[in-house]
Length: 155
Image (cartoon, rainbow, N blue to C red; front, side):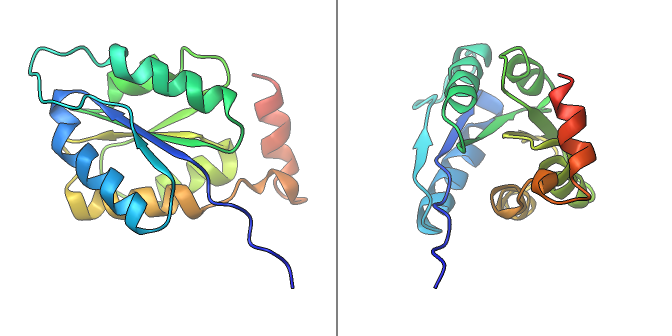
């Protein structure tokens, strides 16, 4: 019998706008059996700056092969921009709508960070997006996925 591949480590960080949703997503990931780490903030501070939390997360994900990151902010835009400044981090943005966007970010782009706009995505939709993000493999190993891997190699 083949063994199931290990679940990735999941790092989660946010700013004040994503604080409550972050806490809920960390707990749900742990309940699902993931090794989930809350990288902050650990107390609500309306004056915090998202790069203080997002950049360390992106560095960890970029250097720990197979790990994944979830970042949250008001729109998720700035968080994705910050994460994508780190070589090896590939953050995809989700602020609601068709969940196929999340699946394709994993399958086609091997996204290792999901940025969620907490002011646009409710808890149930965020749960569903994170589940898709954590369980969808990159297609790069398949014949069809070879073109996706080729494109990523051009980064």
